[in-house]
Image 1 (cartoon, rainbow, N blue to C red):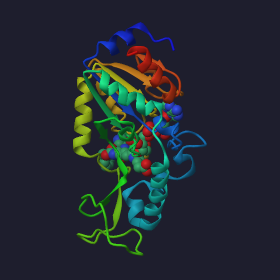
Image 2: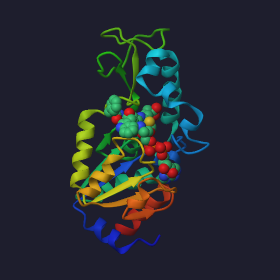
Image 3: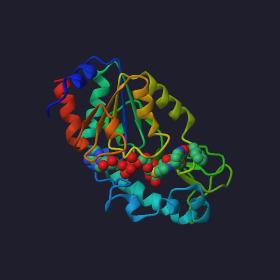
Image 4: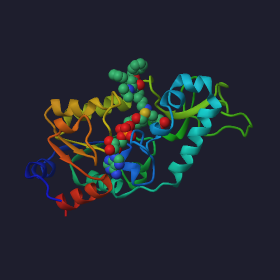
Length: 244
Ligand code: BJW
């Protein structure tokens, strides 16, 4: 891969690099993206019927079971070279912030130490009433099971449409965006707000904006560098080229 010289200089001299990842980085681990035509989850399922608090209220059993089946896929998936390259990058730059929209935990399993989870994590469960995390509950035939503390139905710890992002995660990501020298935007369609605002925040504050994606997105035209290709190939090449 021929890397543009300004990218090499900015990345190797960077004080703070931020990466924002989306479902595309986990596509090569076998997990479906959301909006890819044919294979994306939202090409097969209606988000308003599965990924909103109203849908959970209407059909808690269906939603619990849908997430349970997806959790099994996540648990069987393995991190790929793209996840591992970001874990390696964290070791090589003075300050590195990884903010992910993904709920699959694959960055952590690849060795990334500090991961900001903007949309939660499918492997965690919380109370749909008070919101606290729940690690275990008594065996029951009830689906979804109920919170052992307050009796409200349990739900996956993911952020549905219309819900606020976890405030601490959002603040940490927004702070990093305004502080970084380079913002890598990897495998996201960059349409879901407020996460999609982070690259704009970063660029506005002076960061170089670098997109890695096989397809164009609404961000591509404003990116300083667009690397067209799959993250599982592009990211390991980038790390090898910059920090041999
Ligand atoms: C590869 C690749 C490879 C493929 N290598 N790349 C302003 C205007 C209009 C609407 C709104 C607005 N502000 C807020 C909203 C509403 C909404 C929103 O943004 N809607 C838009 C869709 C229009 N946002 C919200 O509701 C958010 N909350 C919020 O704003 O709170 C404040 C508020 C409260 C009350 C009222 C109003 C505002 C919450 C958003 C939560 C998103 N949740 C989901 C589901 C998580 C749980 C689950 O998994 O079921 O999060 S939706 C889904 O989209 C998931 C993802 O994290 C998120 C982003 O998707 P991502 O990662 O970009 O995936 P894709 O599939 O879209 O793209 C994949 C990309 O990879 C593609 O570009 C491929 O080309 C690429 N790719 N292979 C590299 N190998």
